[in-house]
Image (cartoon, rainbow, N blue to C red; front, side, top):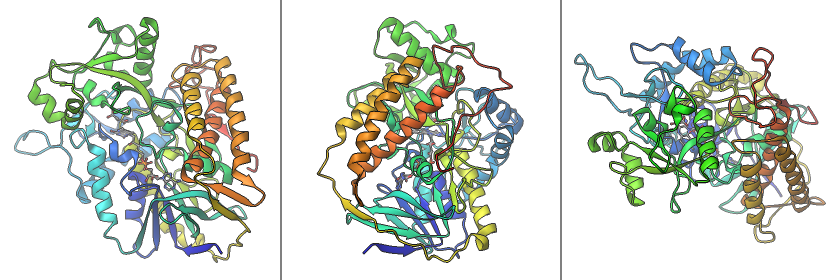
Length: 531
Ligand code: FAD
Ligand code: SIN
């Protein structure tokens, strides 16, 4: 008999977005928060550069808005951009209240101020940070707080399988408890997807393994629209080293003067953009990809060694230590770097309150599509979006909770879940998929490659479905569930890329090398069959 557990609110995901909404909901609500692995394991934990906020005297929210719109290449929703940017200071103050410690700058006019770093696309120093490990500071401080809340139950090592919906509203989630190997039905008035992005659909990714697009896949299967999934962001500089699994080298290194070099020591960014190393990410990643293909080289170099050792070690202690562990002393040597999949700009369509197409279902953070990022996310705007929308979702739930209440009398279908981790081995299929996406749906695309990718993903999808369901029995394991979601989201990415007949922002197709009409350009919105 299926076990059933009831709460007021279920939050799937414990990164910056999930933790923010949990902390900002009233303590009168009984809340459950789920994570696939340990509570802290998330993209948030690994964030390096920081959070964008206009604090410098020479800067302003208006300039932050203009830079975000420029980076988004004509596809940002200006009202969303304004909403997020205008709430940035408040969101940072809240983090400081929670005990997050950001790096201070020297005493100026006897006043302590925060050190602001610079990243691509930003016209000013605007990134508040905790050295080069901002995510670690934010995630661990928020988790410390969550663990003290008596109204919040924590479910670590629980993987959400699918949403449960009845009459157009979301009423719960089937979850696999990886500790005991059992499936539980969690029911609630409100379900929030805060599951992060899907960058692990690519062979090389800066993301932790948990980023497999589960939230996007669950929402799509439940009948929600998704948008702009062709805009997958590749971070220009991940360490190229056999012992480092796509370790990120923060854009802040370039912000503080780091230069990109070819093997002969020549700089090349000036040939691609007047902003050189501080051009937006799409431009820098494509330039590196172009040079690597032109010269048939496996990586380029990033060099900051012209700055003093003291400066490098004090500003980038984590990157310095990690590189040193691998035998690279960045105070006197360049690093070998390559682009890797980093951020999912598209996602589940939500409104200004984080509401999805299904009553009772919200989405926040990287899993969502709010219109903030347009065709290319500007660096350090992502954590900001998690914080601002986390607060907005909490406010909306508290305002509307009476209407969101329901009698939890969901009829339980006759499903028979069978945990079957050993029966099928899926790792070769996962490798096939990730290699396919890297080669055919990567930084540079073409119609032919996209069609081939579509064909291969269709085949993988058919195979998966036959493994998954035999009569009423669902064969599941965590790697199987993740692969099923990755295949589905790969399909959505490819369909979105095929639908865009232009090159814009992060989407570059050699068959349509030019940008379309800026005014007429639209978001790519996919509608599920049962929409
Ligand atoms: P995440 O932090 O990824 O959390 C996802 C959560 O969902 C996890 O708890 C996971 O366990 C859970 N989950 C997923 N699927 C399931 C499931 N099926 N069942 C149960 N739980 C599930 N952005 C910035 O703004 N500034 C930066 O400096 C920055 N640096 C970055 C550096 C790196 C290396 C990376 C990878 C990203 C960086 N980003 C940065 C991007 C930013 O970190 C992420 O976009 C942001 O942290 C996403 O937060 P989130 O809450 O949406 O998801
Ligand atoms: C970085 O530090 O380069 C990552 C910043 C981001 O992805 O926003």
